Amino acid sequence: MIDLYTAATPNGHKVSIALEELALPYTLKVLDLSKGEQKLPDFLAICPNGRIPAIVDREADDFAVFESGACLMYLAEKTGRLMPTDAKGRSRVLQWLMFQMGGIGPMMGQANVFFRYFPEKIQPAIDRYQGESKRLFTVLDSHLQDHEFLAGDYSIADIANWAWVRTHRWSGVEVDDLPHLKRWMDVIRQRPAVLRGIEAPPSRINLNKDGDDAAKKFSEEARKMVEMGQNKKDVS
Image (tube, rainbow, N blue to C red; front, side, top):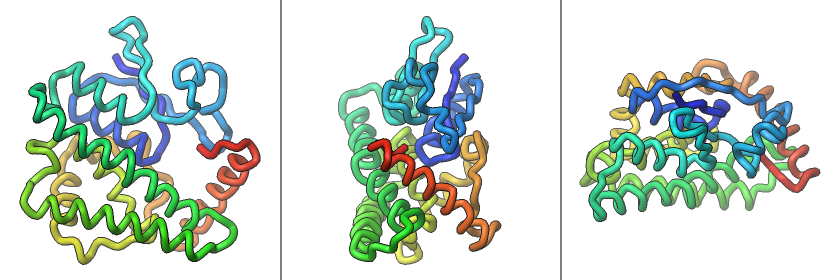
């Protein structure tokens, strides 16, 4: 049994999708980030960085893993699935996993902060992070022109990148001009395990269904978290 400490964020959904794909039994432990539950001592004992997601493998002497990419690697290696075992195949998956962790995630995260959450609209910062997110999307689109998935078969690399790219509208970045990326997004979205994973827990906002007023309210709540994090020199 795996305990998954998480919240409805792209990084959190990366791990819940993987758990669903691997059919591993898990207990969902949702943390309320707005209340700072990720900074409480019990969770810090599992994740010193105080950020979700993290997992505890109850079948392996309560072994704890934090950082979403490390969680994905652990689960893939534990099961022998979603990542090849040969050196070259494994490297291909890890390259695209690092692409997400070092590029897609941080750039989209900053786009979210400046486009959605900051009380002031600092246009050069918005342009910078939206532009870099779009550039990275273009890299994915170019690669996917000749590949069904990012690294051979469907893998944790696809899960990690998809969990972020699917939220592109929240970052203010469109993908209509990236047909290969859209094809890949649609194919992955059709997987039953993926649909279950993004409901564990469900996102609090859906731009297509909830509308601008709900998005504005959610952004205001998130802005308070950003401001709180600034005061603590730590934004979750």
